[in-house]
Amino acid sequence: MGRRRELKGIANDISSFAYSRNFDYKGYWAIPKLYSAALKHKAHNLLMDISPDFENKNDGLDDFRTILANRVVERMISLNFNQNWLKNACFAIFFESPEIKHLHKGLSFNGKPFIITTKLNSDLGFEYQSLVGGYCFPHGQCTWPVYQRRQEYWGETYTDQTREE
Image 1 (cartoon, rainbow, N blue to C red):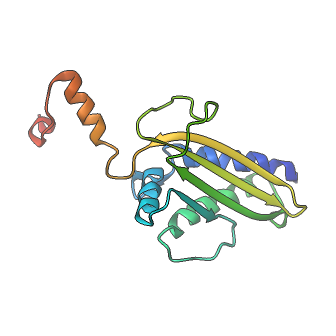
Image 2: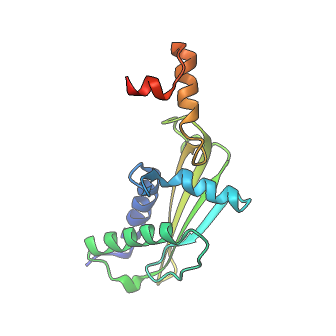
């Protein structure tokens, strides 16, 4: 039987999973897709309830909520954790956030900084939180700077003909 303090590990797992390239949505890294969704709603942050029993809001983020809520459930099952101990789970992502030295460690300087926050609350009122930071562009703008840098460095242009050869 798991212990409530293991909620901190589950929060860390959710944040790390969301930051990693394994967090895919329809074949693309989900963070830039979420960034585009935030810009579409004229916002720079997104807040999602990822409790196992969340309600669909039909705001275009339900697929992301489902992926993250399933991850929470999988981790709880793997730890033999009593699901009644989890009161609620919240996932927030802040785009164009200020850089924080211990979160933005320079793994990739492509794009604008973002911060992922995962909070899990236990039935006893304790809050377990995890923070992760990184950089990304909105979906659709992710690859252009790579080609631009390649052109500047190698002095070549990228065309469909070049790709086929």
